[in-house]
Amino acid sequence: MMENIIVFVLLAIIVLIALRATIKRLKSKGGCCSGGDYKPKKKKLKTVIQKKTFYVSGMHCENCKNRIEESVNRIEGVSATVKLKKNQVLVEYETPVDDAFIINQIEKLGYTVMLV
Image (cartoon, rainbow, N blue to C red; front, side):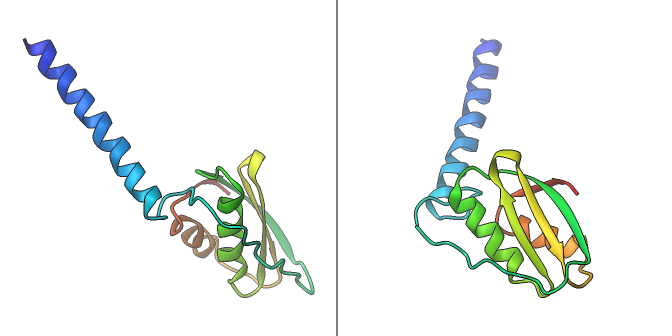
């Protein structure tokens, strides 16, 4: 009897987690937002003073790549290129920008920055 209750509770938790993730994706708030052929404009910097690599989890498709590049490229003085297969966001700096600001831009989209 007690084993059945434990199994039922675990299954209910798993279903709720899956349902929550599905709803986020349907609302395009998850890490992977389906659809669209949009390509963000490439941003060229006049002078690169520094380069950093951010390791990001949750990127799955070309749309993920485009969303992150567009968001980071909006930041004055930086340019981003996403390497999906390596889970990397390569950032070039023209002016100093705090890592926390870039991480915040990426995480607002629903991804997780694992390492800089």
